[in-house]
Image (cartoon, rainbow, N blue to C red; front, side):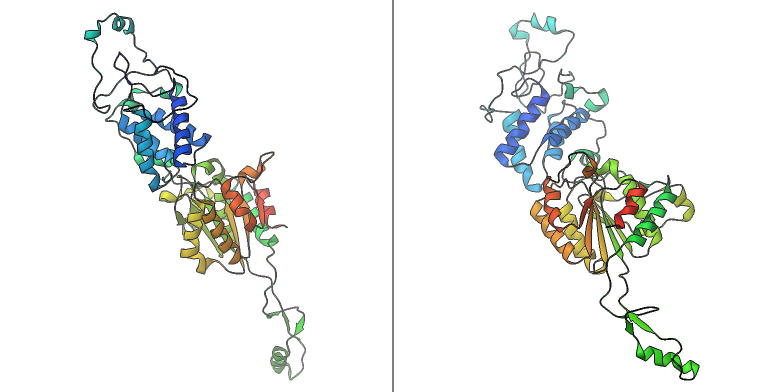
Length: 411
């Protein structure tokens, strides 16, 4: 790690911290096959704004939490981090970078420092972790508050992961809003009434039907002296739908989850054949939590702590496999309609998601995918996650208002 004459640590090789982070991500992507984009670079800079730059250990762990999506990424990350930020013999090659100097710290006594004799300048520390520096750098992402630079300040690693990591995290427990709840309950009733999943293959007794039921007609005639006054009929009844909702609670869906949670609650009040799950990097069944007291529901209520099933990264494929393994036999069948609410921004392997979607489509009546991004003009399902899921969907649409949810049951 380069050190200026004033004793403040610099960053190799670019002029500003954002340029260094962007270049470092390019190295990880090019040399170690990390899947990093603009979003990860932005998250890394936001994390460093919170952590500050005084402690190299916190700096390393903050970047690792954001940029490492898998356990096996940690080793290559540490190797690349040391070579990039703390080069001993030249470090990693950095193409297309201008030969600029490290950023100089803002110090009021800098002119005095320049007048010092070279013998009075302190030698750079041998270990970057032995000395902590209090200066602020000019890079925009390096502005820090005293509390953030305090090494003794409490730092929640879980909270950091919840906000910035693509791998894991646990955010604050969500809540079901009581605003416009009656409108959403009406929308849920309309949705179920319009839902058409086809007819059962079995013949069932019905008031009207296509087949005359001789046996039941003769049995009924015993009460009228043998006169068949009330004929009985058989028909193929409509499927009694079962609904499974899989709700993406990752960070990227934070601004879209309130309506779908309220819709899930409304469906659970209108039908007993509803199962609701949330997922982020883990899966959690919240069906029982959606049945609070009537008084509590009217003014809104908070769900229990969902752990890593809410507020972290996105592992859609792995969470769907968990659902199939743990709940598939109970929840899926020819009468089950699956509703997935997600933006499809998955950090897992698309083959895993594609395999889970293929099994889910085969064992259910159909799949509706609610993607809030599809409401944007010019949207195209080109993200890796949604592209892998697209061949197995009956519908790809969006819904945020009670009226839009009510129309989901219409073809």
